[in-house]
Length: 381
View 1 (cartoon, rainbow, N blue to C red):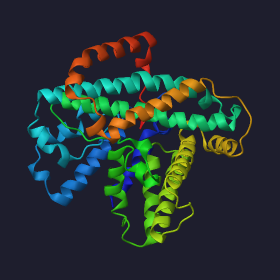
View 2 (cartoon, rainbow, N blue to C red):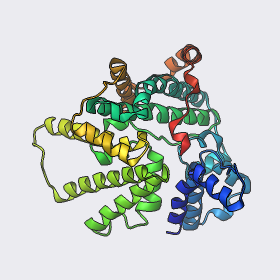
View 3 (cartoon, one colour):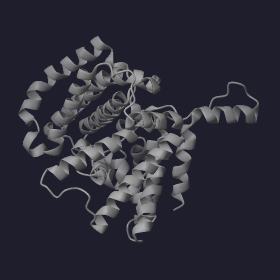
View 4 (tube, rainbow, N blue to C red):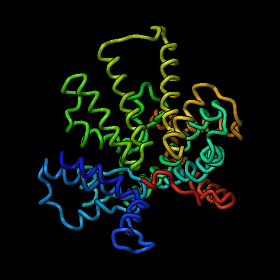
């Protein structure tokens, strides 16, 4: 459990502005700046997993210095994951393999990531950015739609980067783990977290939740373990009350859902499809609203925005509503091959034929719209 203290230290290191001020005061150096590595938390997680797994499995003596640093600083995943485990990629570092099929898959993944990040995420962001600046001016409906579009933007932004990283990995002869599995095709809160940011979900499960006792200590302890795990997961995003509350709410949602399943409590009608639709809508709305803690500047602004949503307050409408609906449709279009890859994935022969044309089209659109200059949202964590 000693590594949990290390996890707590990550958001402290991420708060660079606070560190700058503290060191400036300590050393009496005006304008002093702490230089931190970019996306420090990702390879910190890989360091922790390496340390814990090597202690559990005793493989550290067999690892060369070159192999260790290749794992920690594997550049395709350094911006925003996926978070690697040494046992998953060890053999690949020793013997990376390249095939024509892997080359085509890698290029296809990279171009797909460019479409998500460079085109779709860039199209969503201008719709919701004005709301971020002054959420109190917008109606409750506009804020709710912003929550949906923010979730869509995160998906395009984050899964786009993951696709690009996995594509580069394949071009180097590596098969990197998936990070998204059609997350908005969920059936419950738990199912959502088995589809969203998979390597992070598995990481906090294996290195925080299970060491705390997992689900083996009774219902109350299980609920506490879930809440503590996701509060730590919230703090990973930054040392902010907003992120802590987001983690707390996520832990509570999962705990209550598990309690209902264990106790076999029923509050929805047992009618085919009706129950599934109501449950899906409930999870989507409740979880999307929790994203308010991500895009508002502080706790008061977040709670005020949620209150405006729940009370259907009047205010400015969301500009670009129709464009936003098209973007939500694109989310589900990308989900279809993620959910049913054997049935709906583009055949390899068609990928090879269309890749050059598709790549050029995406590149020209990005240059023409200046879409390529947008930052990756998750690269700040």
